[in-house]
Structures are given as C-alpha cells and as structure tokens.
Image (cartoon, rainbow, N blue to C red):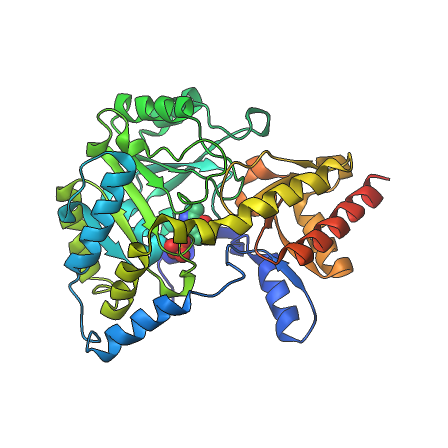
Length: 392
Ligand code: PMP
C-alpha cells in the first residue's frame, strides 16, 4: 500500500544522517568496544533525587491523564524561569509543555506554516530539522552559515531566502548544535530585523541555554517587538540530564499556545503527570544544579582545544557553548563521512560526520563531549593521529 508523500518525504533518498550512529550502536550491541561520541547524551544519568520525585509523584497517584497543555505548576515554573532569564513577562498562558524539545519543534512548524509553505532553517543544523519541517508539511529551506564567519549566519542571506521563498518562519539554534557556536547580539539583532521586515515567525531553539561558556545566552524573544512573533523551544534534556523523560516546552504568544494546545489534544494528549512533577522538582534545584550538569562540557571543550592546539592538521571551531566541538578536517583531503567511517572501522571511535548536519558542515566532524575526560582525551588523540596519517 502506498504511503503518503509527507511521511516518505521525511527522509528523502533514505538518508537521515544517522548512519554512523546506527552502525556504532550495532557494533556495541554485537559486543564490540566502541567509544561513542555521537549523540548529545550525558555520561551521567538523571539525578537520583529527580527520580525519587518522579516515583513519589507516581505513587501519590499522578498516573492518570494530566492537563493537556501541561500542569499549572510546571507551566508556572517555566513561565517564571523565562521571565527571570529574559526579562520578558511570561505567564502560564504562554507555555505549552511538550514531549521534549523535538515535539515542540514539530508543533511549532505545524503552527506557523501551511502545507507547501517555506520554513527556513540555518545550515549546519541539528539533524532532525529538515525532516521535522517536512513532517509538518512545510518546505524545508536551508540558509547556510559559513565556516569563514565562525558559523554566525548572515542576516542579508536570510533576508534573500525569505524574499525568494516567501518564507513563513525561520528556525535558529543558539547555543548551536552541531557547531558549539553562540550567536552574538549583533547576529541576533540582524535576524530579528529580518524576521520583522519579512513578517516571519522566529522559532528559537534554546535547549542548550544553560551551556554557555563565553558571554551570556541571549533569547531573541527579548529583543524589541519579537515576543509577538517568537516561539521558544526549551527542554529539560540537556539542562537537567533528563533526555529519556521526554520533557520540554514551547513558549510564545497566548493565542498561538491556545491553538497549539489543540494540537496536543489531537496528537499526544499531554505529557505524563509524574514526569511533569519531577520536572518542577528539578527546576526548583536552581542554577547551581544546572551549572553542575553543564560543567563537564566546558572542561572537556578546554581539553579538546588543548589537544587540537598540539597539531596542525585539524582545526577546532571556537566553541562557546553546548556539549559538542566541531573539528575542521578538510586538510586531510577526505570528507567528514569518509573520515567518520574510517575512524569507526580503524579505531572503534564513533563521531558524527559534519555532512549529517548539512552541506555547510562538510569536511567537519562533530564530537560530542559526552564521555569521561580520560576516555575523551584518548579518543581525540587517536582521531588527531588518524588525521595526521591521512594528511601524509
Ligand atoms: N534541539 C536541538 C538543537 C537538539 O540538539 C536536540 C536534541 N539533541 C533537541 C532539540 C531535542 O531534544 P529533546 O527532544 O530531547 O528535548
């Protein structure tokens, strides 16, 4: 039986960029020792105190259907968090609780674009972006950020794409996965200007907002006249090491959130109440807790920078945030994909090829800083040695 164009289009050509990751997982399942530096999964589990809160909530009976847009307590806690961090007054009505940031990304695109309308996103991008946009029925249009600009997007190129495609929205992500780059105030002001001039929604993926090593996280929702056209994607996955709990949010204008709650009613029917209670507990642990979760990634970024500084084949994209570093391996003469395949075959080390994150990241590798320091240092040393061998 024929399936819809829409679902077949999620991964046209059959590739979703996760091939090296799947192959590494299969090797691990077959008992082979592989150092996995692929996905953004912490090397610690969710804190036991959060699990206790989850268990206590379930035992106290919060196991039935929860309020579809989210529990009042969690929506209020998220609203308070955004008010405090951005200075933009945010209320319960501005918050929809979702099954992770991923579901928020999908819902946001359903909300802003009709079938076939263009939705812009910045390349390099988090691997799921184009498939998520296509799954929501919109036309996914990449706008390249360039390695020579330190991967800060150029507002004039976004404006050109907005004009050419009559785009309804622009999706950005800072701190950025895969590059580790944090957008400057100037970049964000330029982007906001383009969004206003072309009457576009801005979908701002801020799931790494607690992982900023230089400067401060700026939410574009806080820029002049942007709150009315910005949907912020947030998540507890990275900030609280709660990836498996699938808990996140979308924050935006109350009217948009009311419509988006309808979408939840007709798709997920909400998020488990005991997980939302655990999320409230986790948010109440405060900033010191979040800093503790983020600290290893900053330390490992520094470790990676030191190792890369000791050779001359591979260059590291200066990373100011998130849990990754991007390595420019163009001097080896082979693609990121071929390098990642060889690294897996020859060294049993799995990293993501830059090409998985779009054409703009070709010739790069994304290394997730998600293994203990010593193991990471060993893997990076072997990666750099392979690059030197290839460069001859
Ligand atoms: N956005 C970005 C940029 C991500 O890297 C991820 C996960 N790696 C997500 C969204 C989705 O995260 P989650 O669904 O776990 O909240």
